[in-house]
Image (cartoon, rainbow, N blue to C red; front, side):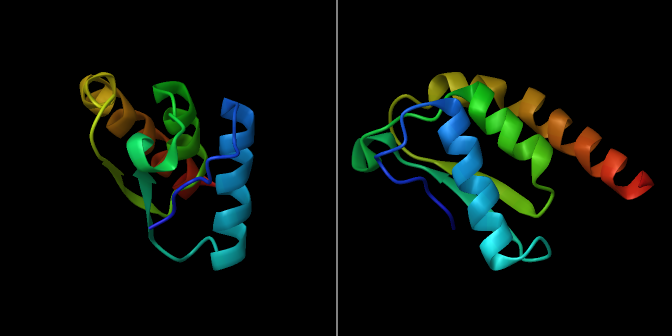
Length: 93
């Protein structure tokens, strides 16, 4: 499970953090994107999550807890589709 540190303030910083984390553990190691705004004191936007999902094919799940999760829940079908398309494109390389 990988969660961003509270010091990250922009979507680009969050996306870059996950790129470094995935590189550190290895692209072939499955992981869970953990979003917990109340504890981490920062909010990942649905756009940042979608970008992470589309780039990193080893991500298995999104675990988000508490507020503000409703928008992310409503985006879940779109995020899942982005992940499926990214996986398909990755397999065609």
